[in-house]
Image (cartoon, rainbow, N blue to C red; front, top):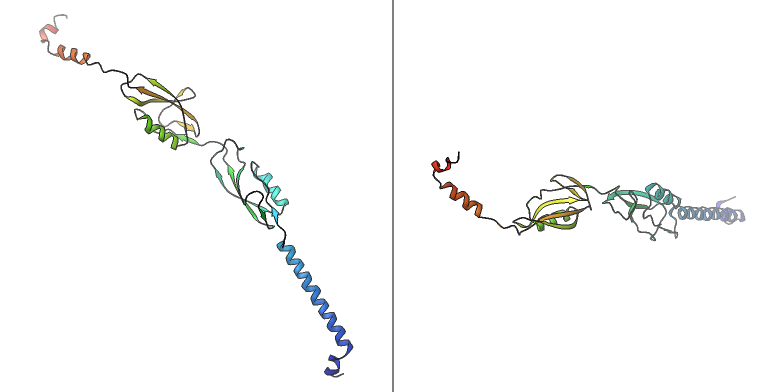
Length: 208
């Protein structure tokens, strides 16, 4: 059979139809496969991971086809459980595709230690600002008789006297002991000493 007759024969058209059908089926199967791999048109709402431990959050995300990625820890938040999730990105309720990474930050295990700076005989305003910048809280103020007003004579925490270089937990309350500025300098002692220095030595020895 010549090529011309074959191309116009019924057999050719049957085979052509079969070939086209196979191509259509393959294309359809490929599109379905790609649709499955990319979850085309399907999005997953991100759950709220707040206050969850990492292991629990990781298991929950895996069930949804998502992946947890730990970024860092943040300063301790007392209203959150230690080592629990305090931040996440994307945020809860956001819709994402399957396989998306969910980035989280954890709460620290507790407050960090703060080293007390030198505070003796420094001004209240200076030390108060310094301690606040370190993450400590100001408690009550007690005044003690002293010539210098508002000079720091001491610091205490829960009744314990603090020293320079002591370690104290961040967010702790520190009480101040300040000078009241009401102690009056008595110059009479100096005058008496000055007068005594003018007494001749022979009179000083009379009483011996």
